[in-house]
Length: 182
Image 1 (cartoon, rainbow, N blue to C red):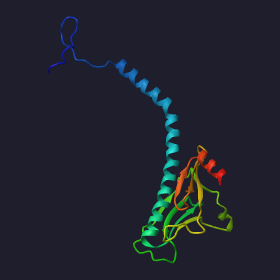
Image 2: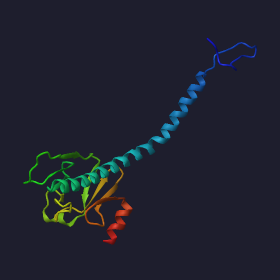
Image 3: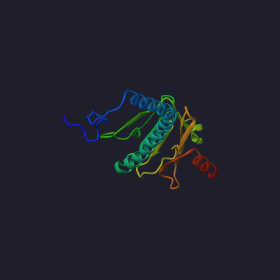
């Protein structure tokens, strides 16, 4: 076995290089301190990511529904069941459902969907967004809602855009500005 060059003692004998036990323990202590300091920040980061991921999934579902309604010529309904923490997408009742892809998602327990839409007061039991066969929104559709994280009390708003057909995600500050301009 040959040893790397430069690994010699004072008397010229070769020795194997390596780490001492003290050096390894010091590195482990340093890693533990770094992890302990960064863990709370990482926790907050991942909590915010679940809120962001859920809002993006809902936004994607609105885009899929609009596309599916226009391409198949069948109205699509994105429904939201706040009590059961569920939401999903399906073809409107009374229309053919052959080869229909239905989606159903469960909302994490620390997240909640809130509505700021006046048509909820008209007795709507399950709020929904309806996409008509031409891709436009139905007259009873919810036009804005918020996904709130109870752990941090942060939320993201999903609102109908300026064109009146597409939705977009707004941060808390953006939503407050958007609400004050309406």
